[in-house]
Image (cartoon, rainbow, N blue to C red; front, side):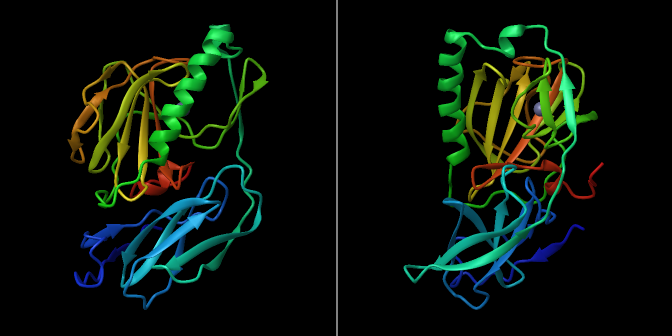
Length: 278
Ligand SMILES: [Zn+2]
């Protein structure tokens, strides 16, 4: 269920949370989901929160401080601990009960064998790509820009988030985003207000754009045929950022869309109003 909560914004109390309203993602307490955890409801000062050692997005909604916590796909079912503190006060914790979720398998055939078993030169490039991608995922800016999300492209949802992937029958990383199939050249728009963190051409992901929606909420657009923005650009919801393509490791033209919280890719569908799991 999608909940819209008004922020009871008292400027004297919450200078770091400037939005009057924030559309919260839908909570899903599984690996790959998002936990909305209430912190210190009566605190005038903004709490800082960490999950598995990574800083967590904190917003003020309905007069409460909420931690929007991305739950990594690798998380086992059971209890997980979210740590937080107010100012320089003592660390406290909340428990997140993570439920089991079995994501389906997906088997894909890739004709370019180096994209399944990269050679040494490819590995050098993949390692360099990983550093850039990790830095983009770590990006943090104080201003919360994102409100509600729309879909970044019109098309058929061809691969859902979390699929256990086998390329040419070899197990590889699970799917960290949502694939939307559309012809090469279909416009891709920013699903919410953002600043462009980085753009680049990566071995697996092809032409990519990373967007920062503020306070640790980021998104990634991959396999693009064309990039229309550059690092530092400010984009509004609906602004074109590029076009669908088939660059990197793909079986056909599509947009791969990832959404990240606390350096964790979570299911993008949780952020789009009215979009239900298939
Ligand atoms: Zn994908």
